[in-house]
Length: 89
Image 1 (spheres, rainbow, N blue to C red):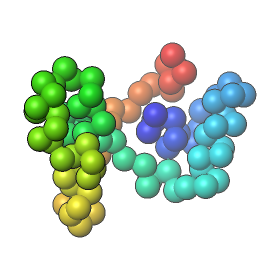
Image 2: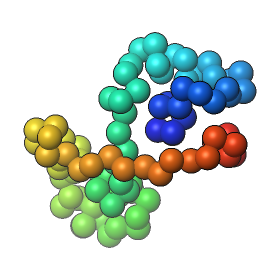
Image 3: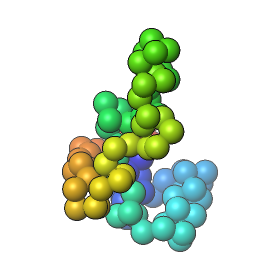
């Protein structure tokens, strides 16, 4: 998704282009970041955690641990550059 939001040269089909235009009008594309699944508490529900482990993990209620730190301390947001001819696949 970051590749879509940050891409300025590729033309997209109407539906995708409309959504991207709205995102770009309301936000700065460089505000968007990737949160790896291994540190994303929203992914805990799909990981098959035992209920006791799930309840002990306060990230579900408080958000990812790094959100409580200064932005400079957040994990680096890395993503691969995807060839423009396969962006919509």
